[in-house]
Length: 494
Image 1 (cartoon, rainbow, N blue to C red):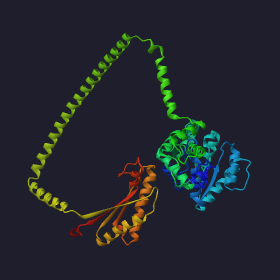
Image 2: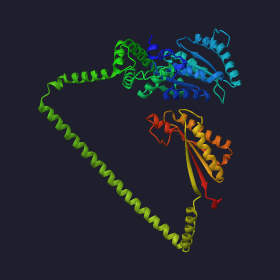
Image 3: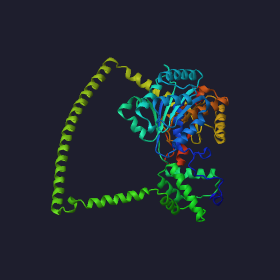
Image 4: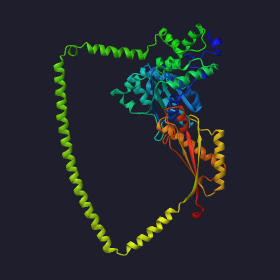
């Protein structure tokens, strides 16, 4: 209805997960990378949690598109099944082509399926969606499936995907066997305000918008009202577009967003906090012991409290002083003993080696002269930057590397040090792996240009040594980099 008014090709804020509108912010990109890592490294059990509307289903759909045919996958959308129904459901999903009447028969066929798939160099992935609905009995059955493994390899990866309640279920004592096997956990947090802005702009651009439909104050209000949950952002934005269209407005402002929130019965969190705070103050003022207390007793209680604190402080200070004094005396005695031992050793050296002093002085002078003759003649530094989660060299980066290659051929005795870095928005292992991949990418390019690999040292440093603040987009962009130093050795030492 409002498409032509805003010059849109289609509705940008539908709740359904249309692949065209997929927006993977840093949180979701990191979560997706974690899921892929769990499969690639065969980590076994993985837990993905998030509140309602944080994009868990979107992540799973994105994962299935990226892993391809090399991973055999089954998704259980409703884990509220009894044990035998669960077995037959897996049989259908994994195409075992058999209906089972008992669990033992299923396990025999399932074991054969896992071994056969492993021999084909494929991986098996079982995704339990809505995992917060799992019962302890079925959890135990799922754990038993993971016991089918080889000495050097796991044959099945099992991902639990659910709301935050699944963590409480796993923390129960009766489920400790499953809990202890979960090697990776990831929790999807709601979007920050700047992420909400990027999310809204992205969906509008995909829908064909070329104008700023939501102003900055409107986006700020949407972020506050939705608490950063993508599904709720969609609902508010869609309703706001309809309201703006009915009023003939081209731009959505804060007032329209607030009206939509009231119509949708979306709670205003800031208003609730304010009201709750005033209620607390009002309630405290009505308590009898605060309302009827006499000034004299207030001052008496205050004076007594101060006196007690002074006494306690004096006791603590006195105790600390006595201990410190004892420690000081002990340290002083130990220092005297050390100095006497040191003097005794010096006397022995003088008696046994009277002629070594002159020799030592001359050898030390020669050593200093050699060390002062630096091995490094000069050095040049280069920096190339990468897009978020990218492992590709841009055209600008290639030009920079070509300059470095020319310098390396000019000085064939030079050494090249390559250090890869990422921003801090990612878990430690993912950042370390990504930074190493970027450094290795640069090294491979230099080798392809004719530089010997023995001259190049490539290292991944993860998110350490940031040159910009990771709290802002521009700072994170600066930190996604590879630093290359070419060290030209002194020709007199070659």
